[in-house]
Amino acid sequence: MPVCCCAPPNFSVRGREIVAVALTPLSIPGRAGQLVSQLGDRAELHDVYDETGSRVYHDVSVRDTHEVRELVALVRRIPGAVLELAAGSGRLTMPLLALGREVTAVELSAAMLELLSERLAEAPERLRERCVPVQADMSSFALGRRFEVIVLGTTSISLLDEEGRAGLYAAVREHLAPGGRFLLSTVDIVTPDDPEAAEAVPEAVIAAVGAGGRAYRMHDYWPAGADTRTVTIFPAEIGDEGPVTVCTTTVGVLPVDQLGAELGRAGLTVLSGHPLPGAWRYRDVLLEVGVTA
Image (tube, rainbow, N blue to C red):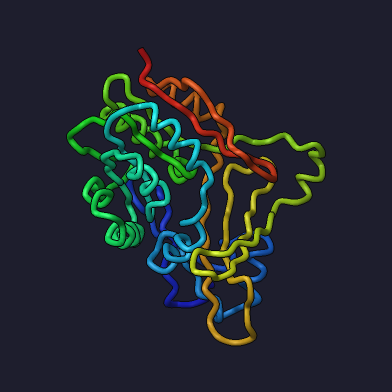
């Protein structure tokens, strides 16, 4: 049953629409779910993309430099305007603007766009005036122009199901300028030295400190062979009384080979892959993609 009747629904992308799914302790697997059950009515569950969860996610991720250097280096080689998909609160948007480019930042979540607007308001005018935020679904958008570079970072393609990814590929082809590049990141499964040990540990617990100085504990639950991962964020310190904000999301696992095959069927070709530093049983890979000749 629901932990808190006022807890917002979990908003899950299913192709081109958002479907509300009630968050309950049973919907959170592993030790994270056990902890939520122990908290009982004190636990206030949020999706990481709702109004509360987006601010927690922003605090945790805004200073994360993972993939930023590699992505910026690739964009620097390709002159022209940039379309950023699933821009979130601007973790990649701001470095892209710093390159001197015009950036159109597409994001579906109104809460995330509000955070991006707050960051732009504090940025120098020379950056702010070159950014165009747009609220739209990355699996179905029409902007009426083409871009030399389209960026989809933070393995955000894992937020879409198969239908949604097909819509994304079609939209990318429609918006990519001749000779342009589609840069996106996804996961690659790392073969462990001891497969039996990896299967015995389906959940990693990661300590993190947000930009505001608050400490968090993140549970990353991914049983061996599963096609989804569930990430749940708790405060690092949980007192004996009062409400506890818990943010969670479940995302797909889309290995490089599968993604490359899907792109090929959609008329897109993977030109190169750039492995990024990783840990545990997966690492991110940044792909450079062009339209098939």
